[in-house]
Length: 252
Image (cartoon, rainbow, N blue to C red; front, side, top):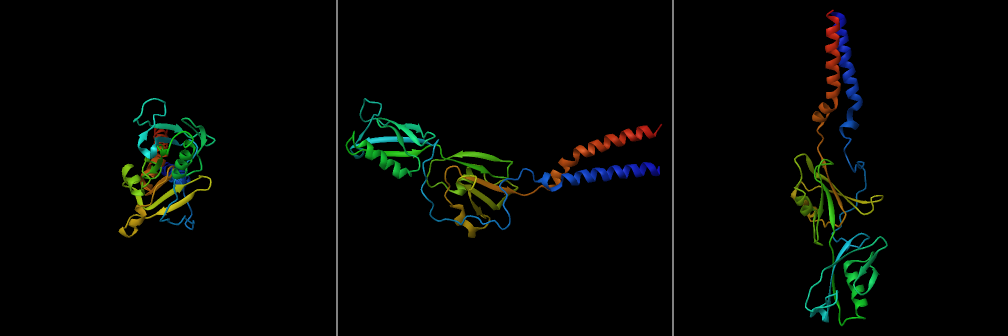
């Protein structure tokens, strides 16, 4: 009987030892975008820069003449017709637009691109007026750590952090409203903004303007008990099986 008890306790210690080896790193293995406690976050900016056209953007282009009095059918034909031209910005920043052919637009703001097209269309039309909009603006929102992600399309130039969170379904029950990160720009060297929107005094942070391709990450609260049970369940199953076999053997 003493030997049985010793064997039983040894098995328990083995299970505990194995579960400890899986410990913290396994329990937080799905965490993303971690930064140190002393990380120097990008400072909040009241006035953000205008959006810059990039390769692989899609542009909605409307072209008018006579300062908007008459609309151009850029396919050639009728007057008084609105034509929506949606073209992709190619890998080299060129956009194939009606009449002009390939024109380099990447690296320009919307306003600068409109002005460039208007200047070029002056060779063909009187007082051309160009309206240009980026149609594939998107933001990626993780509303509860890495377990809940959404890609959200938006068109407004005044799209804010709170709107993005709302469209993603809000902050989940285990999400931390006081620990939100926003990554912007080249992911090799991104700007990282930190937001705490838990209290009303931080209301200005909610109105932070979103840019296309931003990534919003709401850190979630650790659920160590549930994850620990999930991690050690296979070992407990193994222990139960081994112990059952042991009891069967020792009976004979």
